[in-house]
Image 1: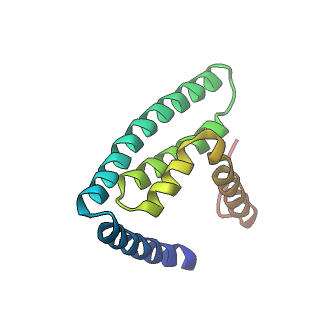
Image 2: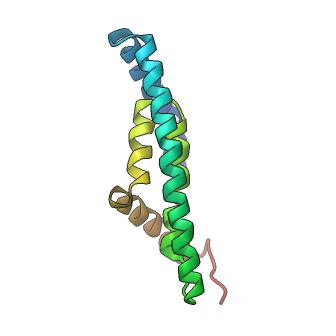
Length: 128
């Protein structure tokens, strides 16, 4: 929890610094255009990947399987899309990494590890 609060303060502060530097280096209008462009592209990609993930989850449910991977994909896509809508270059990079299936794998591995630790500590209980 401590690290989460630190990240919530540190990442926006660094993002603001990079945006200020970018505005000074390439100009205000190109910087604003980059922010808007990444937001639009991010929304499109999040929608496309999200619909694909929903289709995968529906197929897995139809086949009688639990859609665990699809749920993790959905969480990554939701967080990635939110980060892409948030102005800033660092958040955009992390958001794009969370949207593409190939680069999403380390994030899913981290979530699995996190949830396993919670289950081992008894914070999450699975009832069958």
